[in-house]
Length: 427
Image (cartoon, rainbow, N blue to C red; front, side, top):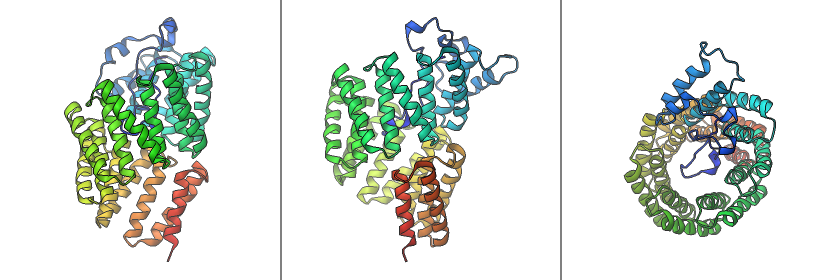
């Protein structure tokens, strides 16, 4: 079984969202080199350097689906190809296509290798990330908890894989609205990373970044700013001001300033991060697009909606060209642009674009994904502002019922859905 890294979507909030969007990497350890499920195959070597996931996907689909191969699911080479194809689908945002492949891979290698084997842990972590990406949060939680437990036994309590698993579990608790558990695991991960690797190690800096972002999202702004300012200082000292890690730290701090209403500082730092990203990575790189989106949001929060919309239009168009119109990152960008249109009074454009986002996201993410509920609620707001109040009320009621059914009554998205419904119901 060839691994791919299992740092999940929630572990990254500044466009370092690396997975389920990471490319595959080499086999997990030299000790496992004789494990047939960890052996690199010819097609893997030939295509491991592909910069285009689309090309890799097409090639791997042939390997997995070809009749000439005439191999069962249990064959080592086919399982490896299925794992890589799932990683390609994930990189393209096609998590619903990745899901059955990862379920099959886990089922067969678990049957072959047993429970607490490194390859099984990696496959389980990958599947947990994908469950989370498609909105199956409770299924993800069950796997994440097992991954943490087994990683501690197999890799050790302070191993980077174990710490990553702990961070993923913390993020899942956050998604589920279990804030006390999320705080405990985020703080434990940061503390363990610092103890094991030191305060300037990349593993520790990542853990601090996740903790700072979590503090910001739950409203502990002073704690978030303290950590974020420290993170900017350390990353610029260790890596240099224009390193990707430093740019991510700057974005995190700028988001803290934005949410605290410190708009001048936020705009200045977001502008610097975007300019550096453009210079280092190019204007089409996902990190540059994310930086531009953050800058647009900062302009929106400062009251300059036209400039926010102008920047966001650039993000949407470039994202469509580079990632495709159905990619989750493109849908997020379109959703933000639709919101800006609404705030400028462009109600027809806002309504049409919100509807496009909902329709596309339903196909890509599935109807029970948390993002779907956010997109649908935004569409309901757009309908309400457009004067279609009965349609808005009906749609928002559907969002309330579906989010409570999928996420539970106490999830933040479920609670926001109820608040919106109450607002629509007022005379």
